[in-house]
Length: 88
Length: 285
Image 1 (cartoon, chains in turn cyan, brown):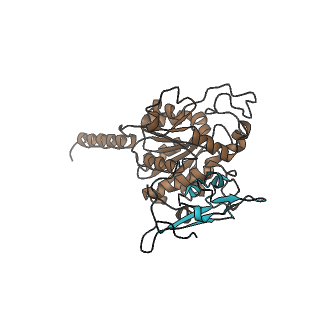
Image 2: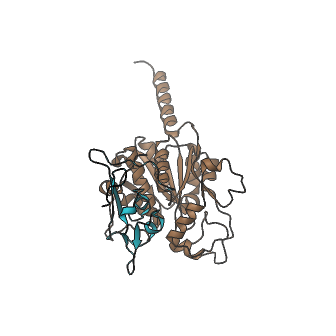
Image 3: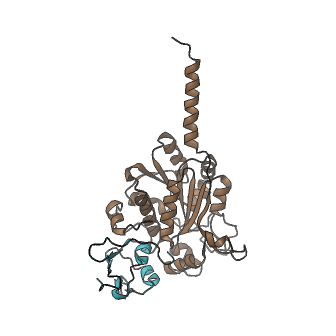
C-alpha cells in the first residue's frame, strides 16, 4: 500500500499471480509504469506503488480479471468514485 | 457510471472453469469484454436470475456460463431466433444475445436483419474478431479487404460488412460500437442498450492476436490494443471530421438511437384487441 498522496488517499494494487497469464497489457498501458513483468514468467508485479494515481486502467484492461485496485480515502470517507479514465 | 470493482464482479458473477483461467487465449479481449458485460448488468442492478444470455458458436460462446448467468446455447447463428422466442414468451426477461461476427452476420445473418426489422426488445452484442478464429481463422464477413487469413493466404478479396450500417439499414433502433481497449465505454454502451426499448446492437471489436494479428503484421495483444486505441474516433469528434479523415478509422460510441413501436408490446396490444372483439361478438347468455 502506498503512502497517502496529497489528497490523503492510499492506493493498493494487488495482482493475483495465479490468474495472470503474462499478456503484459497492464504493463504496457499503465500511464505511470507502476507494473512490471520480469523474466522468466513475465507475471505482472507491482514495482512503483508510490507512482500509482489509482486510474484503474490495469484493472479494466486485464483480460483475466487478475488485478484489484483499492483506493481508500481519508478516514471517515467512502472510497472515491471513478469518473473518467484516461482514454479507456 | 459508478465504479464497480472487479472484486465485486468476481463475487457475484465469475464462475471459473476448472482450468483456472477463462477459456480464452492469453491476452484475448473477450476477457475484458466479459468484464464489461458483467459490469453493465451490475450497474443496472438487474437480477442475474432474470437475465438470459443466448449464445451460438465461437470463441465467445462460453461467456454466459463463465458469468454464471442463465444461458442457452442456440444453434450456430441462431441466438437471435432463440432470443426472440424467449422474449415473446416471457416479456419480463432481459434477453442478451452474445454473438460473434460470423455467427451474427454470416450463418445467422437472416435472423439478425429480420429481428432488427421487427424491433423486438432484445440486445445483441456482436464480438467482432475479423474472422472465424475458433476454427483456425478462415475469412468471414467482417475480415478487412486484403487481410491474410487461413483461406486467403494472398489477401482477402472480399469487402467486409460494416456491422453498424447493416443494423441501421435493417431497422435496429439502438446501435453502438466499442473496442476491447475502451472497456468502460463498452460497459456503458451495453447498459444503455439493455435499457433501450427495442432492438439494440453493440459491436465490440476484439483483438484476435493469436489468429488474425500474427498473420497481419505480427501483432500481439498489446499491439492490437494500441491499434484499437489509435484507430478509434469518438462519435462526437467524428461529426466534425471530413470523410477522408475517417478512412481506416472506427467511429466508436453511440451511433444511432430512435424510438419506434416495439414488437412485443404491439403484439400484446393486438391480442388484447382481438380478444375484446371476440367477447363482444359472443351472444349474451
